[in-house]
Length: 412
Ligand SMILES: [Zn+2]
Image (cartoon, rainbow, N blue to C red; front, top):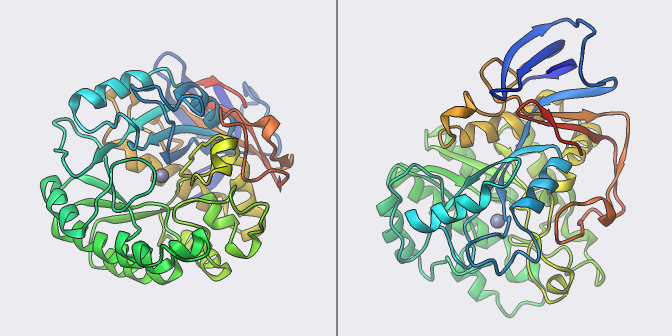
């Protein structure tokens, strides 16, 4: 198939033409100028390398106990709806992927997804590295699931076994949270100091054990200088930020929305939020990753932490462009190129050079955003099985027009 229009890369944007081989699903050529033979109507649109979301919770595992709120089929549909072509799924399941057998079982379940799924393996108090090359996730303290540590020493002993591996960290220090557990609100019980303290510890582990480290859902302004200093020193670390920490801050919390906007780490201050936006633009933060965490209505009202995001991610990108002057190239960097780079080493050979660039040999998966048609987020439009969005009623300036997966048009 051939798609013509405004093609966005990390360094430039140009009027051009992409040809995808539908048999292999890979891009065979990219050229400047147009032939007028486009298979898709792209007037008023920007053609991005397909967006990647390297932090989601699709909820499906061999136990099947959480598929009432999401599974790989519904998560894939939500991803396509939001212009997302590849995801990486977190391991905090009831039957967690922590060894060859449990990882392979989850991999078979993920095979039904249309978008490509990379699976993280969990690091818990008793786990060992897998023989195959996979990304890992370490939870430092209690969040959702059982894969957590109760002391820094216990965590370090485990991480020492994973020397040189790709390890992502959820940075919230359990001791700081324990000291604040009597505070009045969720936000106060998980204060910025918990993240800052855990950041210092995670960076030390990443350096000492030569990990390829990633800090998940980063949210505090005062932790950023540590990340920047570590990067300058040559420590291999990258960081994610979520749409909710870029869009919401604790000033908007009310009795009505507080439970719906509860997540870990929690919403921070206005100043933290603006600092995250600037850090993302500057490149101190590397990825937008959603932490898509579907919970049912009843669970949210019981105080479960996490919000769903896949359906709205493409539209959210247009908000960053229109409201915060992100260039299309900035968006290509933080939503396509960097997430693509993260998963590249874990992909099967059939996916060529992988995701994240519109260039020959890369996967022919593209996100086409309509910059002229606004999108009103509402529960009736989402495909996530949990059936709601934290952006209910929000109008984003643009929308997803097409999600192309390996040369096939999937929607939204
Ligand atoms: Zn998460």
